[in-house]
Length: 176
Image (cartoon, rainbow, N blue to C red):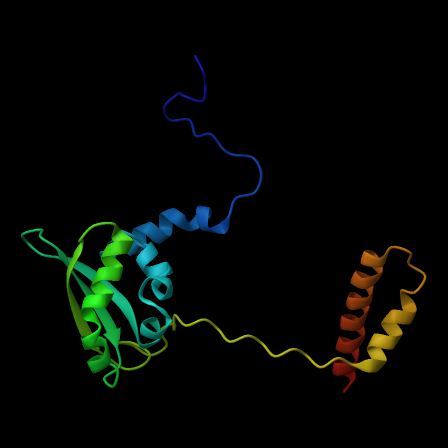
């Protein structure tokens, strides 16, 4: 009898796993508590409804009626954006149903709220802006280049030069 097919035994994979695979069960459980059977709706909201619409609203929950015929998707938005969102409700419903693969959502309810949500300190789902490139210190660059000049391998020399520049720049910033 093979040990791989024995009930109660878990087969562990060797090697690395993607972080999404490690967290998939927890994300699914949290999504299901809010009514999201398809967590892709939460994680890929901007891809589903478009960047312009995703910038002015976010999905709050999906509630299912007693009869079981279609669900209601609740969207959070600010008061100023609600009329624009109201005009696009049908387009949003079509795109969300395309994500589900069938007509899961029959109604969309728009809830006007503060820009940060119902409570203070809630996370914003917008992507963080890119950090500005740090200014290069010419003295640190020259010192790092001089220190790694004897290294023959070009790739290793470039990596060591970047490391040396970062270390020398950090030391100068501490002294100042």
